[in-house]
Image (cartoon, rainbow over all chains, first blue to last red; front, side, top):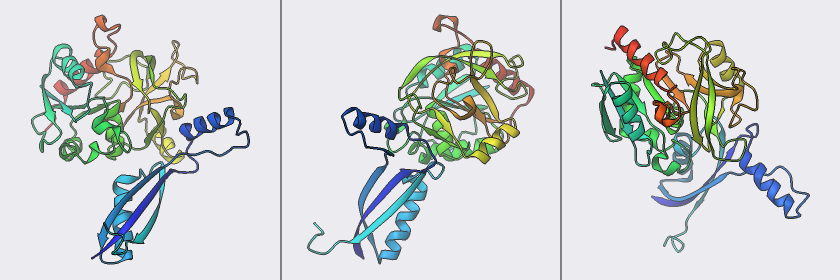
Length: 90
Length: 234
């Protein structure tokens, strides 16, 4: 078994209105950052995962994302996987 | 007739729901913990409001995996009326028992207020005792009640008459001003395909007695009692 560092970024689908992003955008503009546009807010979920290989790690993470981490009705997700070296595996 | 109120860690409308079901509607009512595996004893299942599991990740996202949800699914498939209010509605959405999802309120605020609801159908287990297009007044209290579904799903819900309640003004018109949260088509409550699962953001249990400022919620209890007497489940 190998250990992988996994990060899943969950975002609202582009066509879904994001009131939180809109609020942040307004706040930034009020602070003087007047050239800000298109602000959107998502979530980042990070964890370590043991798996035989990167493909298996990705497959397991995909299943987790579909079943819990993202709501497919309104959200998309993006998975990043990196093998943790022995020295780094504290 | 027996009803149950499903209790998750973080439910906070369970006591009100129990009071309304037992004292106003007249059901013999039990609280059932989220670990329960069977709900065969009940003629009505209520999933109350609150912040189940802290609303962590997404409202209702974690509650949907609770053991009891398997039993809710089974009961729903057998035609037992299931009523999800507020967080209960969000849980039913996450569980896939109802279609769509909730977004944060469009107005960027937690809304707690009394709203008008237009009753779109009176041939359901939940509204048999209501008049045609009757306006019911009930409180809402939510930050995430902005109902969303894809265009085709909205068209399907509308086409199949599954929008049961719509936010409306005092004349029964579903205006933008009467919409507290940005829900598509002013949707406040929807039914599943079979018509026995209802999710709604407003709180009938908080509007069941005059003492609470209104008793229009009691129309739902009366409708359910009449329905269950006429069509016993199982």
